[in-house]
Amino acid sequence: MLGVLAFVMIGRASHQAGESLAGVTSTAWPFLVGLAAGEAATRAWRRPAAVVPTGVGVWLATVALGQLLRVVSGQGTDSTERGRIRWARVKGATENALRELPMRNFAFRPGFIQPLHGITSKTPVYALAYRLSGPLLPVLRRLAPNAVTTTEVIGRAMIAVAEHGYPKPVLETRDLNAAAE
Image 1 (cartoon, rainbow, N blue to C red):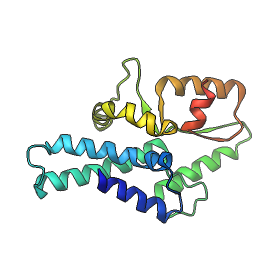
Image 2: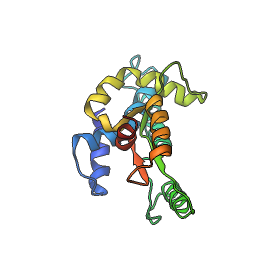
Image 3: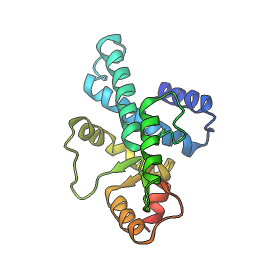
Image 4: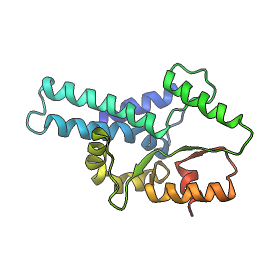
């Protein structure tokens, strides 16, 4: 876990993103979920010091699932369309193109979405990530309340934004939570 936090701090520093607790937590959660999934998948508690399969498996899961969750949550979207990361540029270009349409539209970047009311993902890796991160959610909500939202809040926010609009065209987790109130 310390390795993930060091990785996040270095990444945030290299992008001049600041080092607030909320910012670090917001950036760290996808990788911490990946770390937990990797530890569960490799049964890391059985051979914690083994480089193979434990170390390599945990590392791969941390990076791969962490990046996947960043993409899905909209973290790192590049609205300038000039960054080095292709998916971020493409997502930014898509949001920009939608804003050019002759109608009101809003981009949602929800961060971590807690499924409620029996909702489960049909994508196996997401379902596993949600199962493994469940115990971490109370801690994540306390450390970074603006990094976590729920399926219910997103639904309410969609209705509220469709009916009343929102001052910003891009709604991050904090905005979604506010719009749903």
